Length: 426
Image (tube, rainbow, N blue to C red; front, side):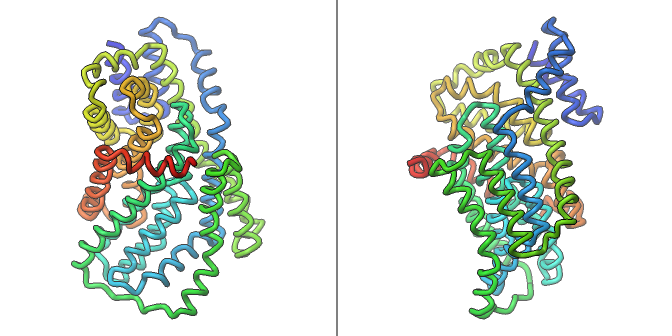
């Protein structure tokens, strides 16, 4: 009854076209009425306390780092560096997109930002070179969702805050799955790109490679600084976000000198706008999370899925199927914040490693960014490449399929996450 009221009111508000953050608040009010505890002060207090979290400070700073990276020339130099290394190979621009997506992901942590930045640069180049635009757009969109899996993932930050799981361990556990995604996309691209009759880029000389590497080395240092700093406990994930923002600011202003002091106001405003959308969504979802706990919905879910508690593999399959279905209708952030308090007691009761579950959960949510009709990355890619959703889905399916296969492999072989986690945690 309680679960039906919450889900029904949430879906009903969304069906009316209400923004997800407000739909979450409406469903919270309905649930409070059903529980007989309605009080407007509870909503206000939980909205404020939901956003009042030190780990969540990492979100605005990583978003600022990404914006500084784009405006300061780091993004362009990453693409240029990848171009000189692999641009001459048949289908080379696709490999450039994958390498750049991997590097972008290790700096910004935002799938939407990475997809928009990469698409704006590479889609015109790939179209001019004769690549199928639908397929190229599909590759860049699926490359964009590496960002929520590879550190510094904003999805891991939100999940860590909602679940109490170590964000640092989540970051470390996401490294190998993120690399696997890039490798899977490269193999898939090698197969499907043979259909395109494309112009091959001229091979760069050794001198050109060295020049591009020298110019791009500053961008490569940032993910190294973040990973090494987290591994050796030099700073927390929140402090790592500040380091990333200051580093990107220094490189853009002092080293590359493409970011002018007069441009900083625009950069800060853009970052603040993106942050405000995410943080309001987080605050609204945490109101719902609090009420989910008060209504004892996790216990109800445990009772429903009780027969699977002694079968962790089947339980993980059931949970991931649930997340895939939810991901078609809801964005990543509210899905994480609504389902985490419901699923974590179930995961703990089944004896599943919470960090391992966090990686599967975030990867599944990242795939949800590519599933219509709500998929945020899909909509961004359609806007950037100026193609319809239908055309994009025609080009995206082989790459989306391989990422689903990677998710299945991680479910079947937990050691792909747990063994590297042990090594990075030493």
